[in-house]
Structures are given as structure tokens and as C-alpha cells.
Image 1 (cartoon, helix red, strand yellow):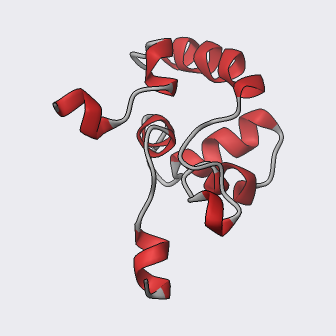
Image 2 (cartoon, helix red, strand yellow):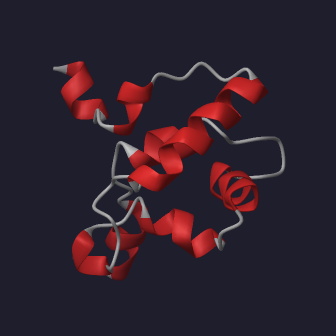
Length: 92
């Protein structure tokens, strides 16, 4: 797999959750990193394969409550099951 393929292959469900927080002029990665007090690279790693030192597409459990509360504050429709479901599974 080339570097470009690895950079463009973002894993779900993390990628889908992060995209919900996209705002004009700011990616969901930046928005969540600021809210959680973490570096942007920490949030990016949630969308990366374990072989790339990522989490395999899963958001670590300690962040779930704060992300869910943040979505509610912003009026973003969100269900806790989104932390576990992959888009491909939802389409099946």
C-alpha cells in the first residue's frame, strides 16, 4: 500500500463520528482536539489502522461521554451506537 493510499484510507466508525463535527473553516479533527484538550494527531490516530499506530477506527472509551455531550451542546444528531457501528455494516 502506498503512502497516499494509507493517508486517504480513514477507518470507521471514528471517521464518521469525527466528520459530524466539521465546521466552516475547521475540520472535525481540529474541533474535537480543541474540545478534548488533545493534539490533533491524537484524534487523527482514531481513524488509522493499528499497523500505523492508530486505534483501528475506534474512538477510545474515555472520550465517549464528552463527545456525546459535545454533540448534544451543538445540536448534532448523535447516538452512542455510532461509536461502534461501521458504515459498511450499517449499509448491509
